[in-house]
Image (cartoon, helix red, strand yellow):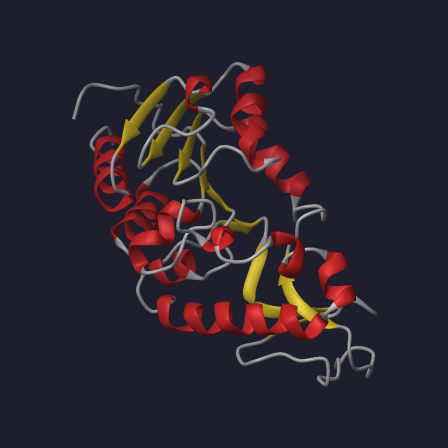
Length: 244
């Protein structure tokens, strides 16, 4: 591995992960030519308007996705395991912000984790905002334990047109980080694609893109390393931990 920036041992590391991190665990990406959005229309399954118009179709789509994730969450790949190892061994704080709605980071051992787009394994009620763990299929017949109403339960995921979760906590982490890593992201989904610019405006952090290929925002990073996540992420973590 070529020489690269190494942060101080007690510095803060913030890591953004996207679909490319989980792809090698068997989950489809969204924006690749053969990804999920090439097979279904966003407007039909991933907006509040779609749920209001045809909740059964939306539930069918997410029931299928949830079933896939129940299988995949048992198999974190070497990239997930490497990030958990970094969190466990690094002296400073390591924060993982993920756009993914699977539980592969948790299965791999990451603890300081922010799911900015929610998770497939929970349901949220449109009527009362009650959130509950949910593993099986979901339908309009299900009754919310919070308000005892049917028809309002939906996947606890952020749809297009909705605000991502925990933005205040994310902003605080970005402003305090010394090393920012972006892993497996397309670079065209905001606000996540703008995190690197937030970090650079503060002027204290080194920024690195770890991706299968350069993203749309690759030129914004100080450094880029490209290849399969299962190869480049463990190698980069090894590089960081060798400095301890």
